[in-house]
Length: 341
Ligand code: PHE
Image (cartoon, rainbow, N blue to C red; front, side, top):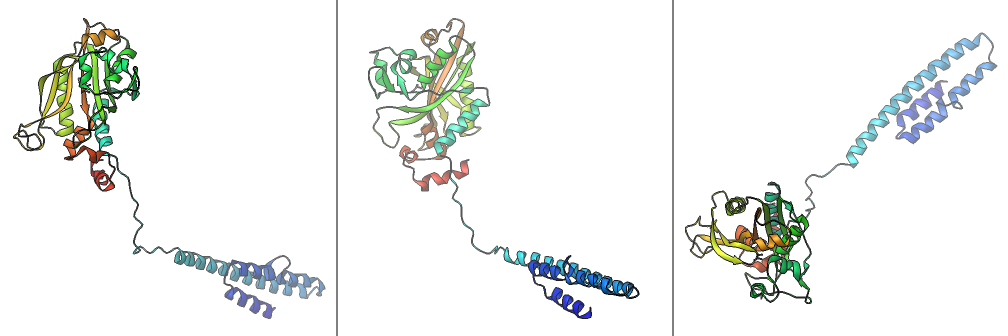
């Protein structure tokens, strides 16, 4: 018995992992193990010997069980330590840099303008870029053969279809959809196309956002207030705007809108060509013909509309000197816009 105890304790002390420990358990402590084997020998002893022998085996068994659970705990602790060692992270290693994309400056400006108007209860309306002559021109009060068509050099697909020249086409579609119902309060963002020669300030394709409000007692003063808020949002709190008379076929009266220069605060600089003012958009009161064609009672309701070029706002806001930077997708240029998000 003593040999067995010594041998088993020795093995338990040396056991290095769970498998070894399990083997020792099987050898000594399991139902078919050596300790159980000792118990089985009892039946061969004479009656007086049995209690003494039984007590001894019990002590042996308890000692071994105690040593077994101590060995278990020791191995458990060791495995925690060795796992910690294995999983050690070297915080001094250089990190893998993740390249994060940025939003395009045109997207940033478009988002900002959309958010500005959505917050005031406007809906955002979109429409097709391949558009019918009808919505692009006729419904905007520009009939066939009218000289006003020359104001916008158009990519025609055939007699009836063209690439829309302005997002006014979305407005005429929207008016048709509302069919006389007010209030109409929408902005219409989208790409437009014109047969322009590309240079630092022109592109044959660009992005417009137009706004349209129709309802009772909508006046030029509402238009002015609305655009002044927009100018402040895009170019800073101290901006003011001014109207100059202009001409569009679909608005009457029509105005050209200038914003006080955000670079020199109106004193005069190269950005504003020493005038203190920067022209940013066209606008006006929706022409009664346009309203009538869409089923509105032009005696009872009125509306204003405005249209701005997103590129132009982006160039001014971010001080970009050439519109082509917005299309050539040079990452060195685009990646500078992270800070504007
Ligand atoms: N559609 C005009 C353009 O593209 C802009 C505009 C929109 C003017 C709405 C007045 C009212 O130049």
